[in-house]
Image (cartoon, rainbow over the protein chains, first blue to last red):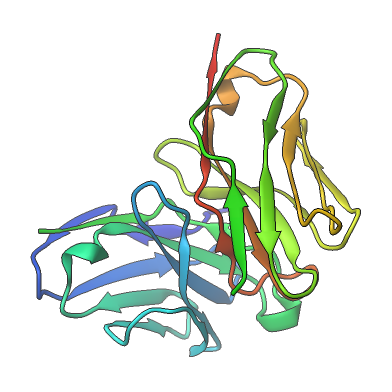
Length: 115
Length: 114
């Protein structure tokens, strides 16, 4: 049973560019959440997708957007990259949303470096 | 807003030593509390959780008790092993036993020497 997978594992971009990160949830899961983990910090919640809609959002600008596909996989898009966007981006999947949501399982992350 | 504060690391212990990593939270109400562990080069794994006051979460020899009086959820293990070397994150969320968005502390790096 495959766990949460993310691609790519590493990525280097320059300021102003756009990036797309991908996540496949654990088998049987229908909810995907994205987190940003800066070096030496704890992860910060970006947003959560359930039934192809954004259900919750953290304190991130509109440059951060996402999408969930019918097969429950998800993409995170970041436009107009800034140096401060350099971080490990973690995807977590779970079953259900809101009060019925179960434990989140995390993928290994995508490390983004913005030069 | 809600927040989680962990003791600063790194923490270095000898094998078989006793471990305590302090965690306190600030929140209006009684959230669910979690400990996650991140091994080098890997994603986060749920270590244990507690969903209401006085609950004790436990897993792999680790324990933590939800103390609402002191708004704390300290992680303990009686005898650490080299394989416990990792970064430990305390976190909270709302929704009873389920998880909404998780609010994490900054993490505490643990190194266990043989």
